[in-house]
Image 1: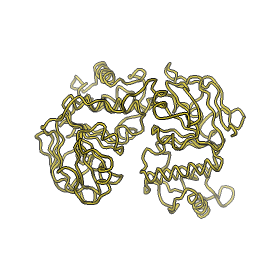
Image 2: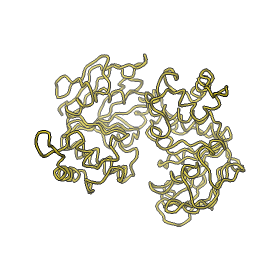
Image 3: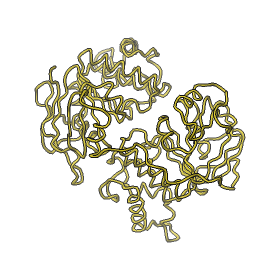
Image 4: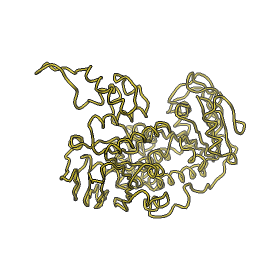
Length: 509
């Protein structure tokens, strides 16, 4: 097949650290090229070089066998290269049609008297949406549609551009299994139409199932680029981390006690959750599983005090709380690692040390004027970063946005560690991070339980919950419909509970 895009010894450094080191890859027309590697391996930097976001220190790129050196993302866009990012680049307050044509609205009129041709805009978009199987009114605003539908809108933008190289960066992160299957069918269709696709994913089985070739990066270096038939999961992991991972989950070092740290009694919020009852014990890792829309995240937000509820009671230790706020939760030793670390967990443009100190900032003031003692703050942040083995430059100067996804998640956890919480609520704590970083997060969860904290883990990855939890609760349509102890852990039984409506299964709650 024809090589449509290639790099030759591409190199880029930040803060004296080489992020991409003499990488030479090839992407062929009519192929899906998988790209894998740990967080921090250089994948995102490589994609930013291709997209004109940053410029190489050394090396060259070629597109259609001509020199390619984009000065900015617009150059990449105009050349026919489309990006579908993990954090979708859509304006949620604009309509689907406006998002697709945002760079080139069809107009009518002449001279200074030109107006957007709304009819032509919507008619054109209907045709494009049909190509991706999206049967939605183009006038619908993006905030009204699901994550999976937003992903299809991004693909529709690429089709409108008639891009010849489409880069999918962790496209399944927020999708249901059904939406993921639909996305993969579209990707195969695009490949069969002759498009070149780069598929970046931490879900290695998806890469094996979908890709024609696989490129593996580690520490900024391209370790291999070969036909997918030459890979299995073990070889991928070995190339990514430089060693064999004997097991995906660390051994548990503690057992839960009978001491309750969090008691949820009869919590109900109309249309969201109903009659929720459970306890989280000291030293326990408690899993919460359910399909999208089952109410898992909403329940965590209620427990933490971000959202209101109609009736019930929440007891933290021995403190009863009919109504409380997030500030009250912090005072009572409750931490909340939210699902969206970029928007809700971090201040992306400020340095790592300040991010880590956010929750306990008052602790670092020592005058009536509440002036922050920068030296104490930096020292405490550095100790927390060291405990979590954070991989970064100087935490006092490097910003959170310059970190890999796995290291960003470590900063979020480090922020809460400074508050010495008794209860950790973790919503999708390993979403969008690689297998090596996942192992490190699992080890941190085990250490938290071993230190006497209780950890509630919400995850869409059932295998993950089975691997790290002492007990698993299952939600369906806002209710807890099952409770499973380790000797009952079975993917089949737990999934049946997640799909079953209003029927208790498993051990008594």
